[in-house]
Image 1: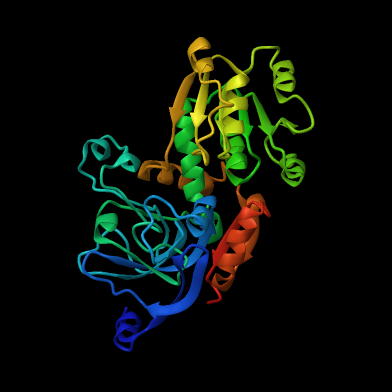
Image 2 (image 1 turned 120 degrees about the vertical axis):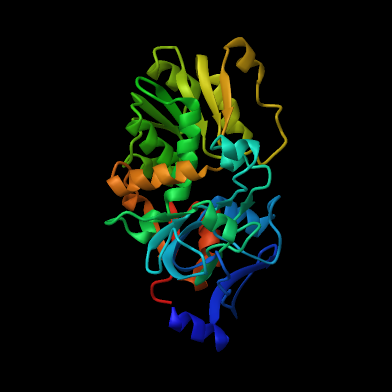
Length: 360
């Protein structure tokens, strides 16, 4: 603590990747944020790069205010605490849930804090994890968004908590269970996490649709029972054959194209459950037959982000080893290479890329 206070007085600088405009990400030194009463300063040690970061970099995002430090898949060590902080201590390894919610609105009182009327997000409304240090606001500290990382779980693995928590939100809403047949569209990181989680929840068959050859080949190493390239065969015919003509019980598109929604609805069983997990990147709905929801009595469920409880449950699953993510870490990069990492995400190179600060 004494080191922290003296460093602030001397104008202690930190390195951060600051998004100043579209495709303008600058690595520069900024003043280390001061830790006011009720706040916590976290020394970052791992922060994942996700497609949302890529979207912010390329085209922006509805909640994004520039300039901004991106990054919301955050793990680190508590470096300093402000006056009055009781629920964390310096030196604790923590995962930072990215949502700063009010805790008082209709949704927060029901535990649906990701639907909070006034939610703010680390990396969008507040500076995020692409920096050496992160200031966690008073409201976040009071609401308990700093989750202690279980012993034996690395900080890099803990940075996967948020995407797993988002998948957990989706599958709990869909009620994935035995003996469901689950279709996952997209063999990237979220597709694999959903497959791992569906298997844990008792899914009997897990089918992947993926048109990228590299990802299709790689998917064979994970929990998918069948991997189909819709560019090489009739996906609908294959899925009907695998399900004895009935179709799938659950479909989770993990990519934003309208084709993923269209093919998912086409192969749904009667009274199946469709998960609207990835927002559409286009307004071209002409290929989607939404009448199938009516005729087959399909339940369509949305899932946006994750609640604090989802993060805690996901972190517990990782800590217990019920969900393994070591086999998904395809690159650990220094902060200076965050822009290259974002480009790799765009080009579908690798599964999970993590910024690591241990050598900073």
